[in-house]
Amino acid sequence: MTHDHTHDHSTGHSHDHSHDHSHDHSHDHSHDHDHSHDHDHSHDQVTEMTLEQKLNTLFSHWITHNDSHKDNFLSWAEKAKSAGLTEVAASLEQAGSLSQEVTKKLEAALAKLLTP
Image 1 (spheres, rainbow, N blue to C red):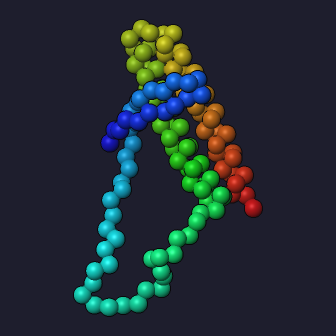
Image 2: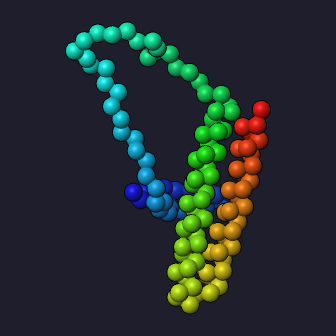
Image 3: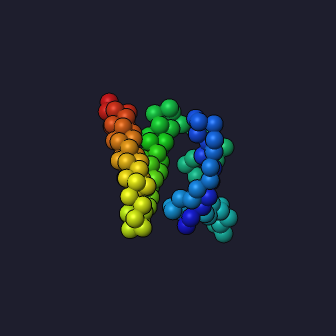
């Protein structure tokens, strides 16, 4: 599934672009039953995530998302090369390489978070 969204950048501009990944947000959480049974939990209690749990979730998302950007940059670099746009291809390859460096930094931070 492809969807569009906007990113605001520190340079003061924003732009729309597509991402090729899917999100499955559907689930059934019905509690209608023809019979009764006891529950071991309360549906009224909301548990707040710790900072570490939030960061763990964010790091996982950021790494996957950033790798998606890297793959797109490299894919378009190949297309640009094929079209004879060598300077454009070189810039896209560099963007892919920089994205890989960002992923390495995020993975290192995640590893530090998970180390007791």
